[in-house]
Image (cartoon, rainbow, N blue to C red; front, top):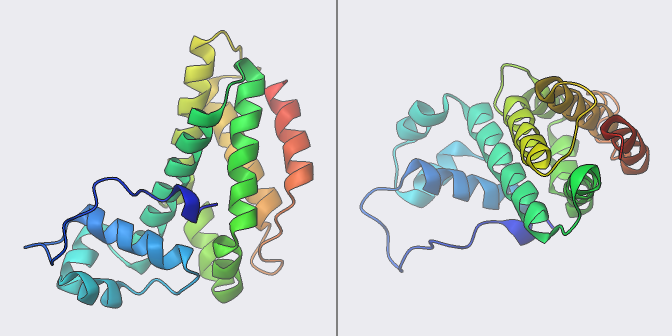
Length: 198
């Protein structure tokens, strides 16, 4: 399902553009990741007709590129789940987050990434000073804010609740570098619903 919500709008006309953009690099990285292949900044640079220095200038490192690609795809997944939801309040939050979590687990590309690069995968996804974790917290905080506008009253302040929910995802889905990708969706869903009081 990750691949099912990849962005398709704004595709270019045939032929190589004069200069590929940062967004083009991110889209290419997402597609490689979803295909279960190793994201290689040099290969993406060659594919897009860029110098690899451009990619490193934009993203800092391969981990930076991977993190930005994962954050972009998570944002797309949650936005897609949000558009499909007809529930309100806390039930809407649970539905959207559950749907996104199930897609993460069912697609398989994230599990493949952990199988191939467990230690670095855990670092890229869970570091507080990385790209993915802060982006995930921001995405969830946005969901909470929109739910509050519809009358939802969170049990604790929005920023803390968003942070706690994302750390829950990390604990139940990834656990640690030794255990790898766990995908413990059912227990995560129960704890998440209790935390959201839905």
